[in-house]
Image (cartoon, rainbow, N blue to C red; front, side, top):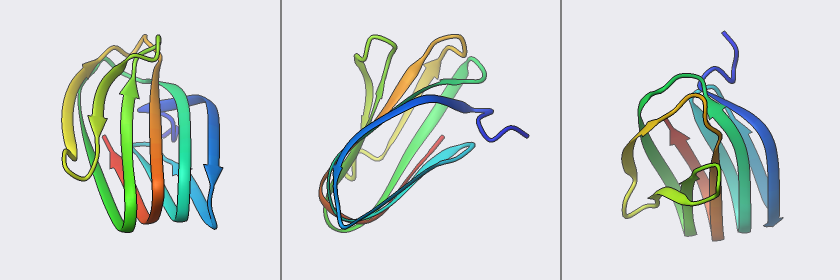
Amino acid sequence: MNIWQYFRSIAVSKSIAAILFVFRPCRDADRVILDSCTGWVRHMGRFSESRTYKFTLDAQLSKGNAEVLLLDAKKKPLMKLNRQSSTGTIALDGKNRYYLYWKFKDAAGKCELRW
């Protein structure tokens, strides 16, 4: 099975200041390990099929904040997830491009976004 079957990442951009930052996009999740991290990471891709996706953000942070935005091809927000609002459901078109935009503010710990 192709690791990008569900979200095929095409391009990644970032602006990060951190002691430790490990970003691992996977088949059905993004995983981040960080320490004293402030900044953002954005990656563009496509979901392989048109259907309704449930997103869940698991932010296990000892300090700071993290949030994830799902943006459309024009970079307009479709969904925002954080520790206070950690799940969301949305119908996506497999033919369109989307962005996952992570934002961190003095964050330490680990985060996982599953879909």
